[in-house]
Length: 165
Image 1: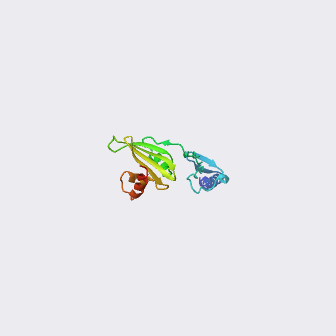
Image 2: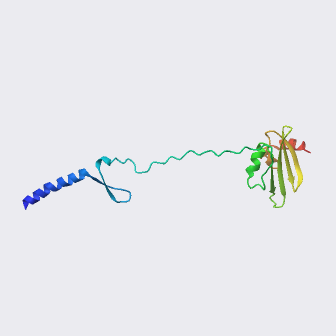
Image 3: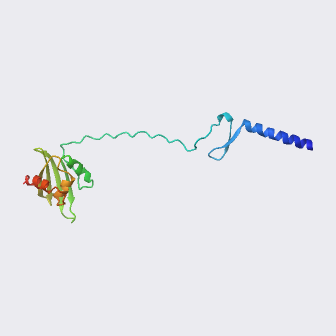
């Protein structure tokens, strides 16, 4: 009996070590086990997947701006429709309603005339302002000043609008 015990104690570790050196047992992401030969094993540095590079965005071609055609910006849902063209003194018009919900306000940039930006404003369909602003002075602050909001540009507005009467 001692003889078998000694043989078992000596043989079992040898069998175990030889089995381990032939194959390695590894768990994969699903929890199942795979037998992988030693030469196929590579050290795993980081288990997070490498980021997939995203392709560079392709610029959308910008349509050419027609600098002569009148653009109707409707009732001002997109105020930049009017403001962007106004800043360049390109023909544009917009219709709005005043804070009282009844006053109709129509503003129109007619374009460059005699090196000046021609601006008109109608209140309830009556011409209220007819102005010729020097190039580069018609902007959001100037427009705001025409409504009586002090932007320090009253002289610019007065000079531009008196010439239009």
